[in-house]
Length: 380
Ligand SMILES: Nc1ncnc2c1ncn2[C@@H]1O[C@H](COP(=O)(O)OP(=O)(O)OP(=O)(O)O)[C@@H](O)[C@H]1O
Ligand SMILES: [Mg+2]
Image 1: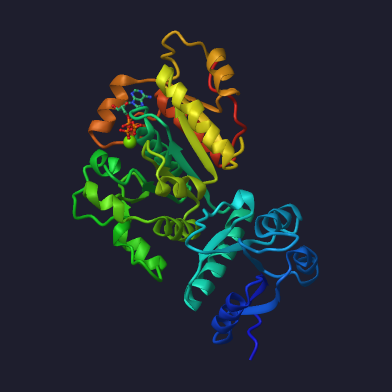
Image 2 (image 1 turned 135 degrees about the vertical axis):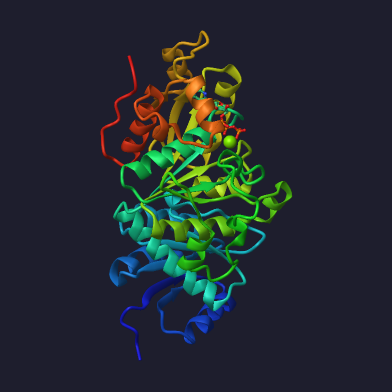
């Protein structure tokens, strides 16, 4: 019997063995209804307009007049707003990138479970984004010690104080900065304790650390060498699941742009890049902004926060704006005494000193990110 709630799928695939594989996988279940398989990319957009599938699957290596990457682009620009799952092979790895029309990636060979699961996740993600249900913000900097962990923690708590259900992910996987900041015992679970397959919402709730400040934290592994065990796939799965459970997710990241860090940034709606008035930090910020531009992060996604904004060390605000190409979206002042003491106590300063200027600055970031105010640059 046909399932009326099934996912309607259109496929662009020119390798007969692969389309047969997909047909076989789908023939034994009713969650996905295969509408049609096209072996020619030039007809797919028109067919999608007529058939209105829920998801289109495109083989990255599709040959012919309209090749895989072109078809992905055409679908993105068609205005149809249909999510695209891209098929690839291990020799041609590809990252998920919704801004470029790649809502998910499936690498051959995959199981029927993986196929159905990916399709379902893509639809949930798309819905969440459409309704603005969850905002994912990663806090990044191409230089160490500029305040990523401090800002990420206080930003997450400030969101929690606004009544936003918030999760904080420690993406600083090697050193687990948040574990140290919060003095969490090493036996508290981490992202590695999530099952590798069939992750359920209940599994996730079991591994989250409930911080007294009102947010849930997904910690990094307790030992340095364990960071390597976290894969890009783990990150993608975790994010898509957390998106369903929370209204905001804040991610603390390490300085190195590893594959896993990139997966965290790719899965974010906003990458908050921390800059300070320090020439190496500024230099690295420019270098990494070129990488971000080349992978398609526009100004909506890549935003700048100047930390310790009142310690300009001889570099002017206008000069900084000129160097990075625009006025930074946010500023947070320096407060050595308060911030260091709060961090040493594992206490968010937005809670211990809500009226301090540094706390007001962080709250402004939280409000702007949730669209609760218009973004007025901090001072002056
Ligand atoms: N606005 C601020 N005012 C005063 N001190 C600050 C401020 N922001 C961060 N700090 C201090 O700077 C130091 C580094 O901060 P933090 O650990 O958050 O940086 P990080 O970028 O996460 O570092 P890492 O690269 O090691 O992960 C800490 O001692 C923190 O207390
Ligand atoms: Mg840190």
